[in-house]
Amino acid sequence: MAKRMIALMAVLNEDIQNIDFNVSTQIAAYMQEGLLGDFATATTGIGYFYDNIKEYDKAVQWYKLATELNVAEGQFCLANYYYEGLGVQEDIEKAFQLYERAALQGHADAANNLADMYFNGEYVKENMDEAFKWFTIASNVGVKEAQFTLGIMYEQGLSVKENMGQALILYKTSAENGYTEAQYRLGNMYDQGIGIKVNKELAFQWYKKAAEEGNVDAEYNVGYMFQNGIGTTVDYDLALIWYKCAAMQGDASAKVRIGEMYEFAMGVPMDINCAIDWYERGISAGDELAKKHLERLGNY
Image 1 (cartoon, one colour):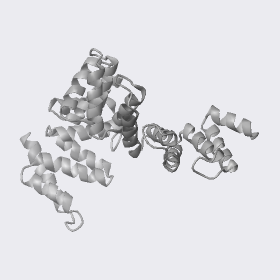
Image 2 (cartoon, one colour; image 1 turned 180 degrees about the horizontal axis):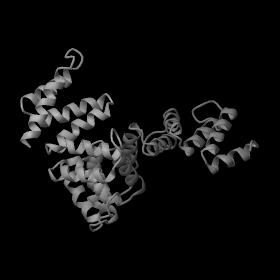
Image 3 (cartoon, helix red, strand yellow; image 1 turned 90 degrees about the horizontal axis):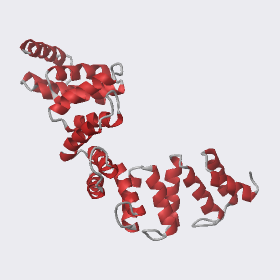
Image 4 (cartoon, one colour; image 1 turned 90 degrees about the vertical axis):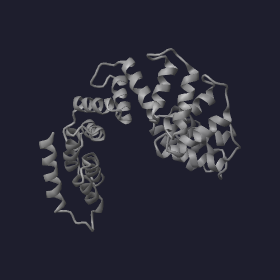
């Protein structure tokens, strides 16, 4: 290790001579940290810098240095590179090994990714007990993705006794932390009365939060609820806006709803040609109702 430290110091001293301090004060600051002995900050920080400017080959070299120094964040970042094939040949086995090394050092995001791999049987054999263990560790320190997936495990009774109350708590915690999938799932639970009393107002609120983050299913549901006054007041203008958001992401049902609004003058002037156009878009996306509408109008 001592020899590696000396080699790293040499790299830092050599590279720092080539830095234009007026252009790249950030990387210079990280290198200075290394010269002062904070190798963890230096190696990972320089890796971040090259990652941000998409010079992945250089980022890999610095993350590898961090990994050799047993820096958990460096191990996590390098694992992501191997997982995604950035700057290196994709290697799921190496990714798994690095996530595990970082997780064993208490890296929460690495614990979540390790749990995902056990949960999905990716590289390793599916193991719900290991997934539950690592999701719990990550969840306890606030990883919103882990909180959501742990909620799924409680809801479905995977490696743990089914507990809808605990699932709801985890979904809500994840949703409040801003995880879009949890916001949508929570909205769906209130909407359908899954494990909880139906509450259309809360369903609308959680759907809207997810929709604002671009969840296509939530965008459609918010449009539908505005159109029909479910959990909120009727507002055709907003219904059309949210339907169009979902349609832009390819949602077939949203395209049909827009067509219906133009055909039946819901918040917009009647425009049969525009309705037909949207129905045709719905057919292209595979919607059967769109086909029936066009047959009714004699345009199919």
